[in-house]
Image 1 (cartoon, rainbow, N blue to C red):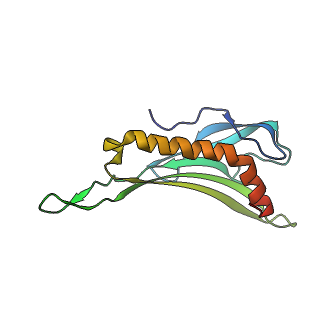
Image 2: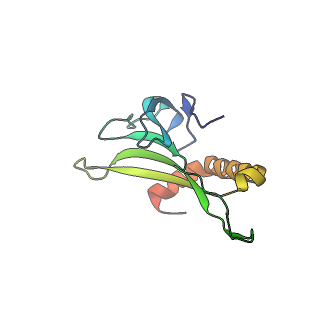
Length: 153
């Protein structure tokens, strides 16, 4: 099974958002090794939030390596290096940065540096790490929002 968002995406709790949902549609990813979705409609109460547009993107993207790497061995068969296969998840949201309406893009990155070979020899521990990562993000989402806005952790 591959990575695919099911629309609508249920958002996590945040101050100022009540039961947030995001209707997404498949968008054109910037590379062939990625998938991208754009937010086209909002659900719940999200006063002041806007959907994706050229000037104010609201997208979620996932990328895999263009070429997967393998464990390196010397002529005696000893492991000499374990490269990483890097996967990235990126959320982009256009935001206003001044009272006069100047815009910039807020980027959220999750980078997965998977040691080559672990997908074959230790898949369950990769899955456990991803489970914790996603669960922790969901659990701290509101507090993380408070920290981003207030600077207090």
